[in-house]
Image (cartoon, rainbow, N blue to C red):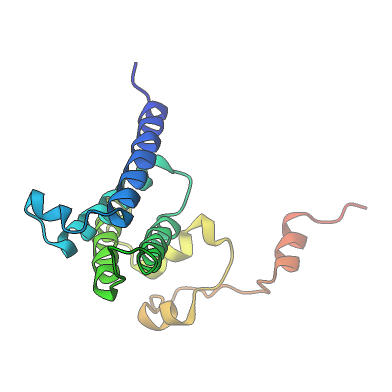
Length: 177
């Protein structure tokens, strides 16, 4: 029976194979190989890094998408630096921008399901209300930018009391006599 763990394991194998293949093709002595497939250099970079980040989202489900996307962009930058030291290749900022574009497309597309879920569960709530109810935020105050962009509805009581770690811990774990 197929389980999510099987999908994750398969995605990890595909990620390793894909990363090694991309590294060999980008650093090897085959410049212009993407033209055999009818792709331009920039399109090949965007597809390669978009594909790697998409598979990494499946292969590493416990890691944040932000971190995986950043790691993919840093990998692209390191490939460009490594190309400076090869005889047949040269580093290019436009290649790095193409890598970043491929990662950005997949990263933004990955947030669609999150927005769909919010629309299903809390469709009438404002983003400020959703952020205030987010359990991961604990009792923290909203960032000033979010407060300015999404002010709380009129008549809603404001959070009172100290929001330091020590005060939250003291409320949650009162001293016993």
